[in-house]
Length: 631
Image (tube, rainbow, N blue to C red; front, side, top):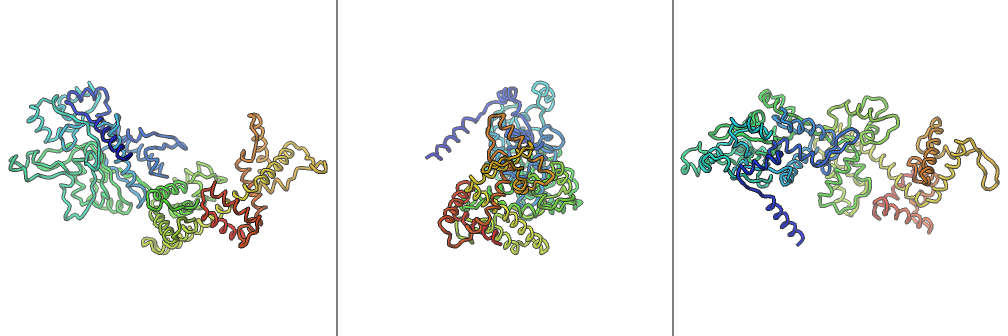
C-alpha cells in the first residue's frame, strides 16, 4: 500500500498547487513574484542554477547534471555559460537553435532528457511556476493580453519586458467570450509534462513522403468548418503541433539534420523572430528553447550543403565528446549496469576499471609533448599525480587536440561485452579478465572498426591487461601485508629510528649488544626505492617524514602506520617483496598445509570484507596473482 499512498500524496500535492483566477489577480502574483513571467531560456538556466554550483580546479560543476552525466564537466560548463546564461539575459544567443553534436552514446540524449524531466519538476516549484491563459491549447503567456501600445508603461511599472503577440485564437476569445475586458480573462497555473504535451515537445523525423508539416504546426479541423464557416477561423484549427505544444518550455528535435528541408524552414522565423506560420493566420508567437542533437558526420554533410546556409547562422553547435577520465567512465558503466537486469551479478573490483582504461585509450590522441605517452596522458586526465607534470601541462594537453574525444569506443559497446561475458560464464560473478576477454572477442563483431583500428585496439587491451596485473598484485599485496600487520609496523618503526638518527646525525644503539652503530642506509634505501625515491631526493624525503612526526607530536597525536600515505605504500611494497616467496607458495600450492591454508583464508576474508570481492572472485584473484608471481 505504500506505493498507493505515494500516488495519492502526489495527486493531493498537484491539486494543492493548482491555481486559477482572473488576469487582474494574476498581475498581483507578477508584482509579488516577477520570476513567473520569465522566458523559457531563463527558466531553464535558473532551474540548472537552483540545483547548486560547485567549484573544482577552477571549473564550475553543475549539480543538476551530477547524477547522470560523468566526465563532461568542461562541455557542460560551456553549455551553461556560453548558451543558457546569455540566453537567459535576453542576449541574441537565445535566437539560436542549440545543437548538441557528438559521437553515439556520448550523453547528448541524456542531457536533453534531463532538461525535460528537470523542467517538469521545476514547474511544480514556486520558483519555476508557469501560468497560462486558461483553455489555450498553446498555454499562452497571459501578459500577451497587454496591448502593444501599453507595454512600455507596463515595463515602467513592473520591470518586465513583454515579447510576442496574442494568438489568433485568444484574440477571438478575448472579444467573443470576454467582450474585450482583459482584466476578466481567466488564467491558470500549468505544469510541464511531455506525456500530456504541456510545454515540452518532441519531433522525430520519419519517412519524408508520409510526414506532414502539421506534425509541427497543427492542422485544420475539417469537421468544424461547417460550424464556423471558414478555414481561417482559429476555432476551426487544431493548435496541436509540436511547436504549439512546446510553447513556454522546450522543443526537442531528434536527429534534426535528418529532417526534410521544409520542416527546418519553420525554424528560421521561430528562432530569429520568435514566431512561426500556421494555417491561414498571422504569424503565431512562441517562446521555446529549441534543442537538437546529431553526430559529427551528419553535421559536416549539413554545413557543406549551400541550401542550408540560412540555418547555419541560426545554430549554436555545442560539442559533446566522450568522457576522457577513467574514474568517470567507471561510473558510466556502473550506472548502466544498475539500470539493467544484470544488476544482481557480482562484478569484481577493477573489472569496470580495466574496461574504462581500454575505452579511454581508444579516445585519446598521441601527444607531441615530450615524455607524454598515452598511458601518462590517461593518468593526468584522471587527476593522478605523474612525476614531472602539473595542472598546467594537463591544460596544454587538452588544448593540443580540440576535437579529442569525438572518436573511439562507445560505452554501449562495453556494456554489451560485459553482458556477453556474464551470459557466457553462467555464474553470478565476473572479473577483469572476463571483461577483457569479451572486449577482445567483440572487436571481430564490431562492423565499424577497420582492421587497422582493430590492431590498435588489441594493443590497448594488452595495456589494460598490464595495468590490471599491477592492480591485482597490489590488491593481494595489501591483503597479505595486513595479515602481517605486526611485521609492517615493526619495519616502519625500524625505518623511522634510522631516519631520525640520519637527520640528526646521531648513532643508533644495538638493542642486543648495546654497541653504537651508524644508521642502516641499506634498509632505508630498500624501502625508499619501492616508491621511486632517488639517491638525490632521499634527504628531503627523510626530512619531510621527520617534520610530519614533529607536527603530529605538537598536536598531541601519535605518528603511526597510516600517517604518511607514501611511506605506508613503500612499507607495503617492501614487505610484499620480502613476502613474495610466501605468496607464491601459498597461492599456487594445490595441497596447502595447515599454516598456508590459514593464511589463504585470512587473505580471502580481508579481500571480501574490505576490498569488495566475493568468495569466487577473491579465489580467482589469488590464483591469478600466484600465476603472475611464478612466471
